[in-house]
Length: 226
Image (cartoon, rainbow, N blue to C red):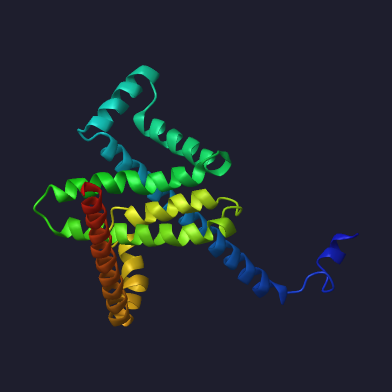
């Protein structure tokens, strides 16, 4: 092919220039946004790692154990914790007894925080953890009826664990407060009168049953003594 043919009108179309410029600018914008998002994500990861490192260097018994493990293994305590989290997540995916383990995660830390809250004068943390236990109980009862349907779903125990972590995460508001305010509280307020009547009827029935049982027991003891 001759050079003159390459630059001929048939091969070179000036009308393509704006299109090429447009797509070039668009591609540059896409790449720029992608790089910007990656930088934002990296900054967030660095920020989370910094916060985790600050938390793991506070003075408490758990961090004292981490310090000893760090000295013996020569591995940074942040990496030790992250490695333990990875192992825990992998076990939740492939291990046995993972549903119980996820429930144990949902119980252990909130129970500790609840006891701490009871031993302080502040009532706000009492309300916070009481809200958690109400939602936790509702989720546990719901799971008792639906576990047979959902247990075979891949990552079920992992999702369950993340659910409990979302409910207890130390943010304002956390997941348990959101679930209570948006789902449970509106339902309760809508049916409060019916629920009160049902609870009162059940309480009266239980009281009558208890009294009758005590009378029967007293009569049986009296007859035995005679």
